[in-house]
Length: 588
Image 1: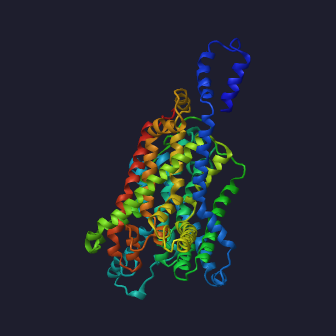
Image 2: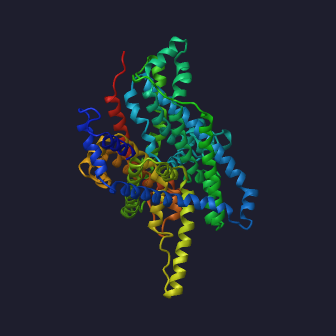
Image 3: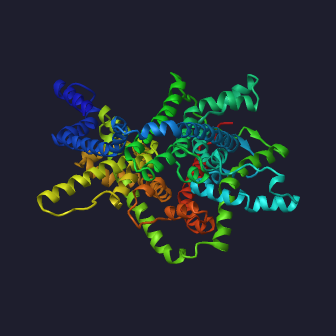
């Protein structure tokens, strides 16, 4: 608007005799249309800004509540936790984050480099197959590997039969341990790093690798000293996503007996009955997550990671013989261990000794899970469109801060969000109930606490960032000249969004809906804490059976979750394939 006003002032002040006759007829209609919109433009823009601010404030409410709980006294519960289990929570969470970080970097970056830079048999298959473990929730892979590797499982049983060993004749690494949790999480979470690292490698120019080779660097030197440093922001982003998922996990660490902040929050809330102390543990966990993210940003300093060349990356190394076999094994191992083995174990358990009652309950459980996921996905995508479009209309500091605040939820574990939702909702329910009793003599009961509305709100807080990033990417691809053309034709911002932008970015909107849908389907901690009484989903049923050591019965619902989770993975795989096929070839 400021630019339009300046141009309008320029033409009005200097008259029609000033300026180029060739350019004035092209400029004046656009300027007149923008200024001719009158006072309606700023008012509508302010409405979008206020709406985006309202969404950001609502999403930030659980975060504010959790941080504010630090100031509330706990009557000795916090000191008891500090003297007994707090150090275990802190040390185990830190070791879990460090181990998973190293694991996902080793697997994700290595696989991304191989499929991006090397030519070997099966490379085209592994470009998309390496994403398959995204379909397996972390707690499900933990359950399957426990059944496979425990003392009574098939692996150790076969080992004892072959070697004629007894229980005390050999040592086998325990799967239900901190090391086991790090291993299974790394196998599931590495696709975050692989996806972003591969995109960064594909954006790098081949000439940089060629220059490094002329300066005496071999394949390893070019990889470690040129390609990886340039891809550091993308790698750090993938690691951050993986670490947030690892620290937010509840099902795996609880089943493996590893005391972390998430298990401590759940135990403090339900076993000790201390919501304030649980909220303070949640605040400590949030602080740990923010410290991890801030440490990586601080380590970059003032460094910038920009590519000035335009040519795309092409495979530089043709692998044959033993090297090709090693590359094939390196790419096949994470796919087999992170997807193939868990699915095979679940399928065998479900067919042999599955949930006998699942057939009758399947419709109810599936309806609960799918309806929750669908409602949350549609609402989250709609809010993401509002915030993203508001930022496009007015990229002011206030709007940018609003968008970033609205995206904080993905960095917060589900258990933390659940605590932040329960506390204000419970107080609001109590206040309304007390007012109705005093004035009308009736009780309202629980309006928000322990209801579907509270659970859906937690999902919105948790996954809005995921939808917002996808929507913003779709909006960024739309030329702003289309906005100007719509305004020339008298379209308001709302009509422009509905009739121009949404149809053009429908693919991004649909992607956001599907990704949030599947993440909600897999979400466990928030669902366990906030679900209504006698309300079960597929994820809750898997957890209940696994907690009772009934892994065979849990396999049926777990397999259903994995099969549904394949939908976004297939879509991502097709998108990667299309990108590869339509990518401009590098100059030879």
